[in-house]
Length: 627
Image 1 (cartoon, helix red, strand yellow):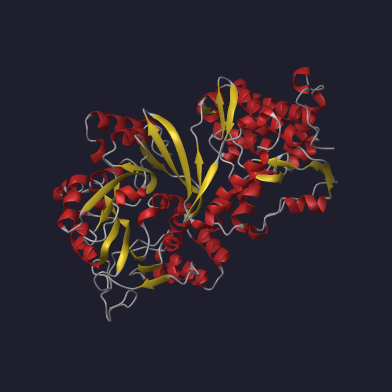
Image 2 (spheres, rainbow, N blue to C red):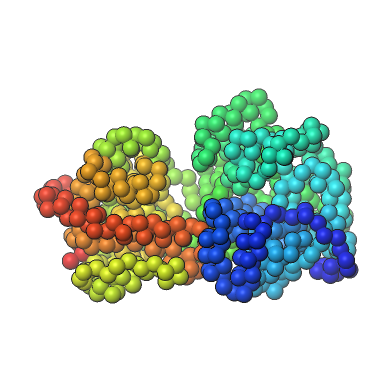
């Protein structure tokens, strides 16, 4: 039987990825998506479930499949994707493989697999993952991306070995003992395990260790088995490193920010496990990369060697990024090199944008170019991969914690002013001639048609220069050392012809959101309330407007410009983010912001009236990007 030819009357099985939402809304979503009403289907799901971010992440959050991008060298040829669920990683796999047979037992998920791709090399197939309906030697790659229990691994490994051609590779995600035992669910690290799974048989827990998995897979016939230890939060990928690389594993758990789980808990647990010598055996999930031997006369380089997660004597760690999988080379506890791979072929434009914008900006004869990252790129099957040297310094967001920013308005003001100072220096080097926007044109600049957002028109024409902008300028991307800006990193949303309010406005908004823990609370506390924070923000922004000659009303109107730019990029480049909740959350922030535009504008105007001319220290870096 050839690949793609299902066996007649194959058994139905529930052994597949769970639907991303309740069954009825999920199937209704699939019906709409299948008809081609993709944005309408997403909006239906947003309105049909209580917490849409989780289901939409399960469906479209490709950043959580970033580890697959790092394994790009071993995925290819004819590929069997076992239990792919709704196919979140399908675009990535189909770009790497010549043909993909997506074996999925759930009918709605299989329909979604067909609907979400126009690639002719993808063939959805019904069947049992434990006994795929194909002949021996059909595949060069087999993927099993849903975490498997020790029992499932034992039951399937022999059949998977048989289905692989000589020299083929199995990539299989398996449960570690903390997940099998239900420990990750109890401490909030895994939202996908039910309470019933919290009390497994002791033998299952004992079999969920790296050594036992290696033994099981070698017993099935695989000649080489290497394991990646995978750190997950809420059941989703955060980072990975080879299980036998102790230095990389220790580094992986050290800097983690875990969201709902206190960072000190994970760091402390990782440190304790490392001291006890059990860290490599204590991860919630592993990825087994298994190779079937080749014929004696055609030797094949090992899968471990092809993956290339090591360089020289360095250790390597894969970390999740929004649009890229980030491979960090680590030596003696420090990062010595960085690679950023597209985590989906549709996200390759982020790296292309970074390279083209930075190449153009470096041509300026100005000291500010020294703060731009030194980025090069090489081609991969997923698109350009960025290579960056290590950067000295620390993101300014990590130099002061949010509690300090909340309790100390002066510290908040210093961080804000550091960001504004760099923007002024940057815009001085690149500002073009101002031009006038009519009220209609100004409103059009801030409109997101796909999500039906448009602000009110300004009361009159607005005059602004065109300048390059970073597009995602926030305290996490501003790296400082010794009190000075060392680098501004992550230019994936940048543009050479942008709005001069986009970067300073976004920086102020993100700083407020970081300090107060929530966008809406940050806007109220830092822009509107009769508080010391709001007084400092309005004074700093009024001073900035004075220095760059932008009227406060114009600055206020374009305050959310960077959010608009990010959302537009998702739609203009067919990014998978367009179907996620992220752009909808950004538009909700814009609606909140523009509902309060009059209050923000009035406060900034009052501060501008009370502010005298810019002091002499700022005159040397004055730039006119308005009027």
